[in-house]
Amino acid sequence: MYQSLDLDFVVTFRRTTRDVGKILVPLGFGLRGQTFHHDVNRFTIDFPKGPLMVGADRIERWDTVRRNDETLNVLSRTDCVRDRLAAFYHWSDRSSLATACDVAARGDIDLEVIRAWSGRENASDKYAEFERVLALRRKPRRS
Image (tube, rainbow, N blue to C red; front, side):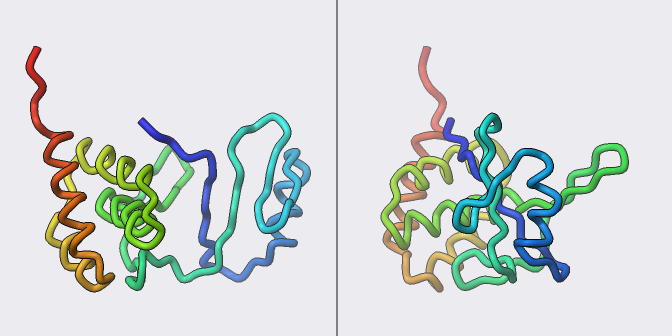
């Protein structure tokens, strides 16, 4: 399974890269371009300008993960699939198609939301390819 090595955070309160740097630099991160890098940690951190969008759709709802007193809002599984499909639709990134299928095959997604959004993104043909590849991934394998 593919896992990207970048963490994207859309900050919903007013902060600048300089403000975030005051927190991340003491932790060993340095700013290169618009992305924070660390010499030991392989993950990079980016703060794209909001609002949070998938294609032309603004994300209004998300899943919330809580651990003790920590809270993290994350894309729903359906929106995660749409995010990866956006890269496939707009840049023909086949690894993003594979990732979308991997995420979709591992849990519940709303295919109707994805199909309708794909039409609005003028990508119905590529959506059909997504459905074909997803069906193959979900198909039980013979032993």
